[in-house]
Image 1 (cartoon, helix red, strand yellow):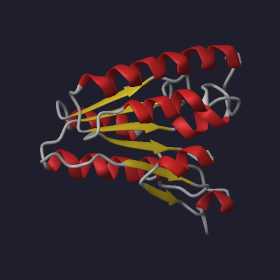
Image 2 (tube, helix red, strand yellow; image 1 turned 90 degrees about the vertical axis):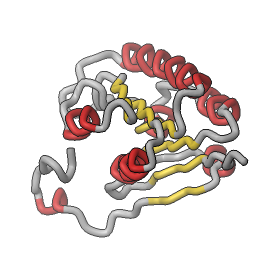
Image 3 (tube, one colour; image 1 turned 30 degrees about the vertical axis):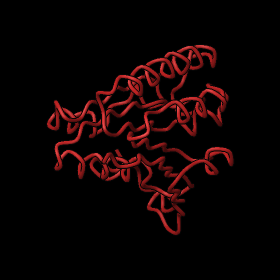
Image 4 (cartoon, one colour; image 1 turned 180 degrees about the horizontal axis):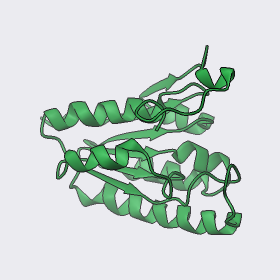
Length: 177
């Protein structure tokens, strides 16, 4: 008998949403499951999981699509460019979800993409509703919409209590990126 797939959401203002999703991926690879992680937003930045994910291939595939964080730090791209890429990412997500090649699909930072207006909530709801019954799907990012929370099986909200940024410490390799 095939197990029922779950819809999992990691949201909230605290650190650890992507890290929690990567923890699922690491655990699942140990059971020879196939995982695809599609990253919205982060695409043009360099961060540790880009390197470590290669060590988990072929069981773990990571696709970084975005052009980097939208409207902050060094973003000089018009919002329309971010929207175009995010819409392309939705098409890729749909193909991966329907392919039957994966046990788990992680949609990293997709909640941010919805909140920023780069993609439509309805498109994300369609992705979830169209998934094969046995597929587990993980959505990360702050600002998870109520409609997503309602249809999810597991929702965890990360709450920041204390963070080194508050003392002016910069992001640390291996911890923050």
